[in-house]
Amino acid sequence: MDEMITNEARLDEAIDSYPLAPLPTGFADRVMSEVSRTPQLDAQFRLQFIDLVLPTFITTFGTAVFLTTLWLTGCWVIEDLPQPTWMPALSSYLEAMPMQWIAIGAVIIIFELLVSLLIASQVISDQPQVAVSSNP
Image (cartoon, rainbow, N blue to C red):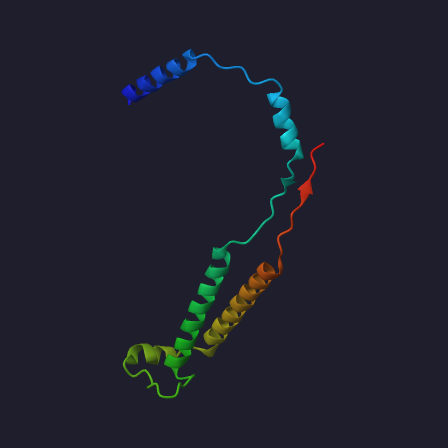
């Protein structure tokens, strides 16, 4: 570690020993006039891709869990799919589940869907706006 600090100090000393060339005449004025002509854009909040994917994934996963729960409890019968007799312990537990929990799950999933649709509609309808601020 000390060797690296010593090497950096030697490099700094070597760089400092070289003379600096003077800037061309009017360099600062040209740079500042170019900066003043360049429009300065105000930053605008934008949603990222993950802001859409994450709520969609959570809603899809919650819907899948909810539908699987309905299927396991026998509240939702799917044609050509046997009833879940392969998991009698879970099946009997879910059959004893109060309907309030199923209703709460349905309300949460509907809320997640509505929020995802709201975010998606805002992102789709929100066109980027360029606000140019002039420098005096």
